[in-house]
Length: 314
Image (cartoon, rainbow, N blue to C red; front, side, top):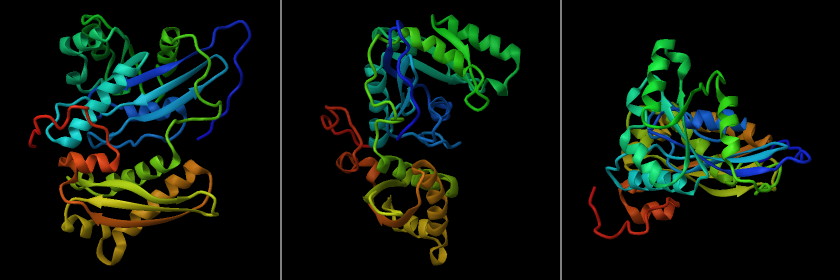
């Protein structure tokens, strides 16, 4: 993953650090990451709880390098996959130098409350609250929401990941809070994750776009083979579902659905790689995988170290 870069300017301390994009599900964290980095790295969907794993994006300039972490939405877990998502989100917050807590201007329930304030204060972090989707509300509503956030003791600003409003101001507030440090990653990198991870995510995004209701939440995608040395690049992805009936839906009559998934995914992956690809998709059944910790670990999802103690049943 590459991007343009120039070296640090003379006589200015270079700043580099991690910024966690945290908040409730579906508040626009992924859209904001993509807008800030200038790459389609994180899945964007109107469906809630789209982000399951931490997605990183790197913004490098002559004066700074910011490592953004798009964390899963903060939720009360109801089953093992959600447990993994919450743990991943909290770990991103714990590891960050700065937390940008993203809220949705159209959903006041996503604003940080006293409980969130207490949890973040205990971590002794620099926290900025960004009220996203501000283009969808009027000025009176914006002022009321901002005042509500200030009452909890947070620095706050209004942004729109879609229009770009406030994103430069957000960067301006983040930069002084980052530690003085040389860049941690090569100047051309735009993510710390491998291309195969993004291939998996873009196939899953296509499934989110095409399939309705609960099916997308039963899907996980994993690359089985990635031959980057070939031209076109050969990628084989397995789409796992929970039940045989779901497998039939993903494949479709005469393979029509899986063909459409392939077409959408190929366009996205080729745009990301800047190269042609040959994409092969297969569908397999892995019964009840979101509720099985062992299966989640096999797929590479993180879980709390003490996740198996007590063996909570979902």
